[in-house]
Structure formats: C-alpha cells, structure tokens
Amino acid sequence: MPSYFIKTLLTTVICIFSFTASVAQNNKKPKNIILLVGDGMGLSEISSSLYFNDKPSNFLRFKTVGLSMTSSSKELITDSAAGATAFASGIKTYNGAIGVGIDMKPAETIVEHISKTDVATGLVVTSSVVHATPASFYAHQESRRMYEEIAVDLVHSKIEFFAGGGLQFFRDRTDGQDLIQQLKDRNYEVHTDALPQKISEKKQAILLAPDGMPKMSENRGNFLTNATMLAIGQLSKNKEGFFLLVEGSQIDWGGHDNDAEFLINEMIDFDKTIGAVLDFAKNNGETLVIVTADHETGGFSLSADGINYNKIVASFSTTGHTATMVPVFAQGPSEELFDGVYQNTKIHTIMKQLFDQK
Ligand code: MG
Ligand code: ZN
Image 1 (cartoon, protein in one colour):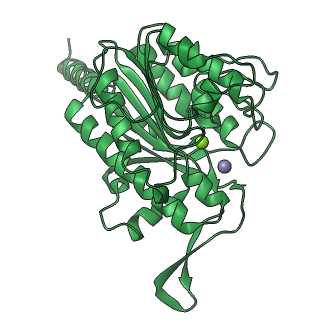
Image 2 (cartoon, rainbow, N blue to C red):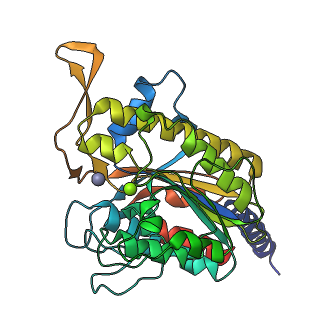
C-alpha cells in the first residue's frame, strides 16, 4: 500500500473522529427547557433594561442571539394568540386563534406532545392563566376571548404547575361550574391567597387575582420570580425533565397604554426573573433557557431629547402591535440552534426536536 494512502486514510480517520467528538459535544441535548416570553418585548423594550435599571441587565449574559419574524398566517402584524400558537404548535395561524390552525382544527401543542413521554410541564404568567399566551400552550379554541372554555381546557390539561391570575374563570362562571373543585378532584392543591411557602408533592394551581395579576406599580412584588423558582423546584424533581413557560405578560400592556413607566417597570421585573432562571440553569447544566417575544408593542423607541444626545426620551408610535422582528436569546445545551434569522415557528420546531431526541 503506498504510504501516501495510509497517511490520507489516517488523516481521514482522525478527522472523522474529531468531527464526531465535536458534534457530540455541541449536540448535547437539554433535559429541561424554560421558555420565557416577554409579551410585546422588542429591542427598545429590552434596551430599556440597560438604561432604566440600577442593576446590570441580565440580557448581557447571553452569547447566542437570533431574530424571529412574527407575522401570522393572514396578517403582517400578529397578535399574542397567533404568536403563542406559533411557539406552542409550530404553525402560522390567524390572529385570535388559540392552538388551532386556519381550518380551526386543533394543532397538537408542545405540552401535549411531551406529556406523552412524561416530561413535566408548567406555566407562570402575570396575566390570567387563560390569557392568549399561556392558553395557546394547552387549549384549543377558535377565539382567545373564550376564557371560560379555555379554563376548562386547563383543568383537563397535563400541566402540573400553573401560577398567575384568572380566578373568576374557574370560580365565578356563567355556566355555574366549579372548576376549583374539579381541580381539587384532579389532585391539584389550589392556592388563591398567596404563593405556597414550599414545594409540595401535589400538582399546583395558583390563582392569585380575579383576572390579570396587579401591575408592578400596584405592589405585585416578587411574584414572577418567586413563582418561577417554585415551579422550577417542583418540576425539576421529575426524572424525565420539564418544560416551563414563563411570561412577562404586562410589558405588552404598558405598550398598549403608551405608558413608558408601566412598560419599563414590567420589563425590569421580567429581567430579574431571567437572572434567577439563568442562575438555576448555570448550576443545573441540563437546562436550555430561551428568551423571546411574540411581537413588539407600541413602536416603542428610545430617542434623544431634542439635540441632547445624553438624555433618552421613551416614546411610542402606536397603541397596537408592530411588525418588527424580535430577538431570541438562548443559553444552555444546543443554544447554537437559535442563531440566525427565522420564522417564529422555528422556536417550536427546535424545542420539539430537542425533546424528541433527548
Ligand atoms: Mg401575553
Ligand atoms: Zn398586545
């Protein structure tokens, strides 16, 4: 055998070996995924966490960043229902749709999909738990406004831990059903006054406001971070891993109100929760953290105060949503998959693949 052939072969073997080794390392799969959605959180909203907070922004901790195109099936500008259905079910659908396609037929959600392999699931939000973003992860309804029907879907879902507002849709219903009792019958511990002090063996239904949770300026306190860490504490006991949705729901509401102070207070609260989640993930080593938005709200901008380039004025161009791309931040095993510019549905595709290959 000519010696050059051996050398080539040897080199090839070494190359294949080192290639395989590096792929194996880069392709380490997460056991858990935490998806944090800042509703209405575009780049200016995120940037406000640099300028209006006395603590360093937790967004500075990410190395992997992508951009997500947010339009829905029919509209250039999405709403939160179609936006969340894209994350949950991987489809572009019409504005207002909760877990259904343009044919209004149910589309399997990631929660339903991974529950088949006993991955634990949870959600923590500052809206009501039946609001569009969380609803799209467990419900199938033609309209986001069908709150009572969505609440029934939550009771029948596999979600083991949920926290937010929305008590009226379970307790004071037009059809007279007592969903609080139904939750208890399904082995949920129900909390309506305060977060539980410690982790329990039982499933958790935490409903601390009639509809949305109070604003930060109305003394919501540390609810979002505390409920998120409680959820992580409980769900991480599951051997098969977990999926947790966390939503900073009211960043969007500040945008709709064109109320910069409202928006920024909610943004800083969300940033704090991201910090706590990143701390957990760093210690845990098996958790992929994804932070993104369904769309931007308000056409929020951080402009100069006239000719004074040392003073920022926060302003808005609309009371609705906008079409700008939104960032996607990722950290943890397989974070590199979130590099690039892509449709919002790709976030679903990647999460599903990672759970399937786990
Ligand atoms: Mg929302
Ligand atoms: Zn909105």
